[in-house]
Length: 205
Image (cartoon, rainbow, N blue to C red; front, side, top):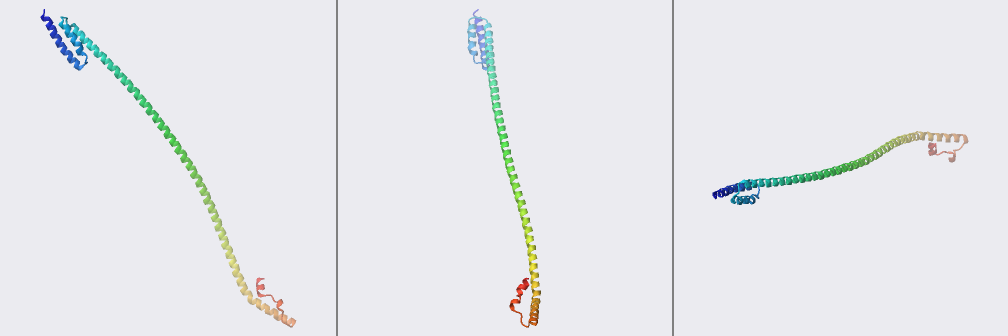
């Protein structure tokens, strides 16, 4: 009867070794639970409490796994919340950038339209000035052509007067001598100088 407790104790030690191997793979609290089982075995109890100790270890492991699952779920929830917050911030930044880009486009379009209108008005003013200058140039050319024609006409008239003067000079002298001779013949004396018309007057007439 005394050898039975020794067998039970040896069985408990082997179970304790297996429990320690299970501890290395599972949880660090296994050694604390195996020692009471070996003590109970040494007191002469049956191996049933050892199996109950395994069930407790399994329950502890399951509890820790559930805790880990809860922690993982919390981490997932936190990651989801962080991801949602990051996505929200990114979307807000993207919307703000799009709004700023649209405002910049509108500003550029407005400035381009303003500059285009100014350039168009300036071009119209320049075209009007060019047209006016062309009209003035055309009028000046016409006036210049008219002056040239008048000058040519005056030169022709002057030339004609010169020719008439040259042609009338001998005839006037001849007429003057004829008048003197006729007066001398009729009046019996020379014609007074006061009655003679200067040649320049006659040419002017």
